[in-house]
Length: 264
Image (cartoon, rainbow, N blue to C red; front, top):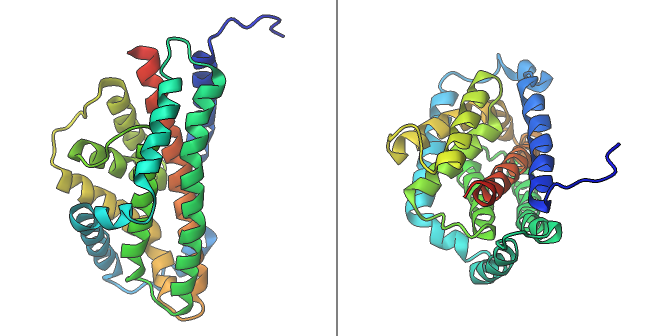
């Protein structure tokens, strides 16, 4: 047992985050297809995957180009920016306290948790009515609202192609598993380490890849959500997927925040 621990609060926070990240990645590496997805595999109509690919791609492009302003009206962005400025300033000292570092993370988490409840109510409500595909725009909007609020909590301007790419990679990393998840995770960490991406491919390619990832992962649930009444089960999975994105995103944004302080 250590009697004295001379690590700085910043290093302690980094070590704690690394343990959380390792545990999450280990869980994702061992993830298997759910029993419900296996049962539904032979019932999904041909062409639904392509339809979902297109629907998710259109939703991302629409929200990025036309919907961000609307999303910003659903929460007090200026207040969030003020809080972020105070919190990040306190944590920007040469030797920030553990309390100051934790305050940034706690503030970022509050907004994200609030969006979980909204996604559940919306998904179940539309599922009861048998509305699956149209729910995609709402789901993408809630996911992006969550990412926007996380970005703001860390003092990051999300209205740039660089940050939109980061958002899309984080969503992709949260929903994939196995080799694809490992590759995506490495892409995110490369950006955190160097401030740029390994590839100079355009934003639209990131949208296409993220849309394909989401349509693959949500295929069976969106099929189920399109069946009246029974669809409530599929709609409830909006919460499950939002929680996955939330958990992974909070780790990556906090890691990015700490890395800038440790390695700057």
